[in-house]
Image 1 (cartoon, rainbow, N blue to C red):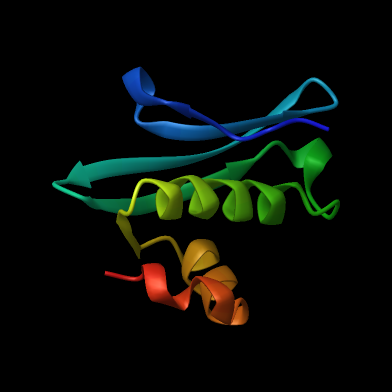
Image 2: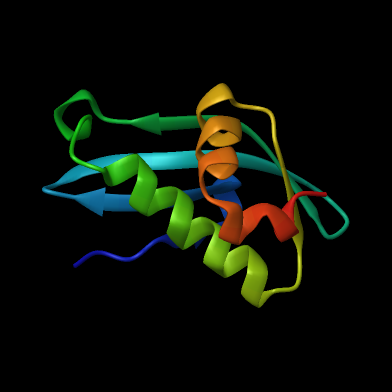
Length: 90
């Protein structure tokens, strides 16, 4: 199984599955990561890849004791449906 990677130089979290990419762009404001955009390659859509990206990204953010502000509609909705991550909203 693939794992989510923080590509700091690109300011995005990435998850590669089946040779295709899903990613979440971010911009940092101190210990807050603003998430303006989440993307999954069309071949990955409907397979849970974006959800695995979100969970992996938020687990990394939690481990760093950071917060997140989802701006992207998908990211907002995903976090809203997963109360175990509500403590990360900043």
